[in-house]
Length: 358
Image (cartoon, rainbow, N blue to C red; front, side):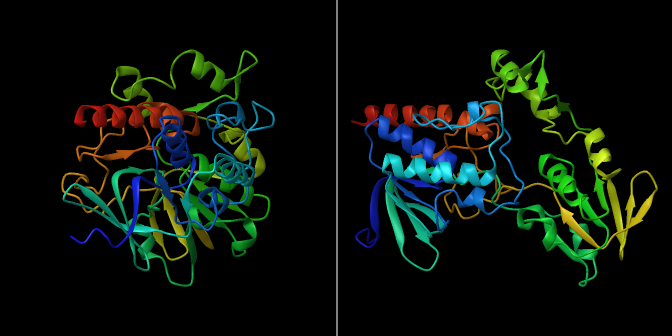
């Protein structure tokens, strides 16, 4: 291996969203040198390029990164552009070394050194890699989508921006998670909108006894419940989330037609689990995202379903870490509220590992 060809970094952070910046903060506090690489043209583009009405899942009070708060109503939800700009300011204020518009397409480890190959050529060389690419990198669309005629507009919610980009006529939104509900609510103002639901959702109220539900979740310890404990396992199964005004009653009031699970498509007609059917003109798949870490070409790093193998962000591959994975350590891990703690945890592990080796 000719390691002389390529930019060197002691520690390489892949991804400059909230997880990557939290990792940078922890490393800087620890006095460790690092380099961030991100595919976006600007810091925050991972949020900036999503649908127009998106707001954060958590309130501002628990959505800031270490040292710089997110200004505004502490119990309100920041808009996606507001948060994008916050991330950009955060990186600039802290002077983090960052290479933008650069996507890592393959990661290898040769003779104890990580080689990150870049789209368009070139590579980065490092002793340690922290993967902070987030949980929404690979849109998941069901196989049934392939049965649609080519003249029917369809897209994943990752590509949706606003109602103006959707053709006239009835629109079917498939999936009633937070994004599906957001999009259905927006579309109902201009389109006949159908929302095909899946498993029964556990929706939490915005406030309990005058307090934000997030205040209660923090105070009762639910956000920090271990992913491997009984409370964490129950929470993972139920996957509750606050309504943010998109509960069933609010959706119906806005004009959204709630349907049962989508089971078949026949041309421009959708068939649902309860035996009903409806015509539609376009379809938006709010069917989630899949892990796809095939670009990490290191033995023992990736599982059979292309998932990142790790325990609390620590890979079995020495020197490889993760920040920002859903349920990495607890419920907060996949939220902005938890990335700082998870970053501090993996950096502490890194420091102790290095201390043992010296």
